[in-house]
Image (cartoon, rainbow, N blue to C red; front, side, top):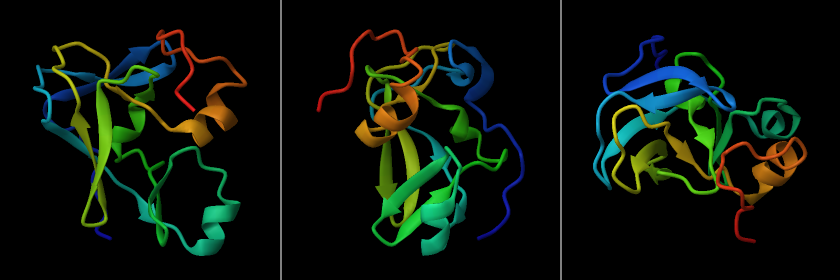
Length: 136
């Protein structure tokens, strides 16, 4: 995999959020619009089970990426029970797309999924502001 530079793409900015740092829209996005790629190093099978990273993304049964590198600006997108984005996997790559119209200044979010929610978010209390747990 080519090494990507730590460059914030146009259209987004990193800023303070209720969960620490977050990724925010620097311009409006329309529903269905592609916002950013979530990328990282592909892990070996052993690393998938031993990694302590909270930035793992299972692309498929044979490929998991670790998005913890700072160059992966999409890693700043926080969880929400009522998200405005969702991950789309195409040809082994993970993209984040808008699932509703997003205004400039709005924090970007997607649902991290039940397993991640139960292991990492629920024990500390969800801070997404949606005040509901994801559907089981």
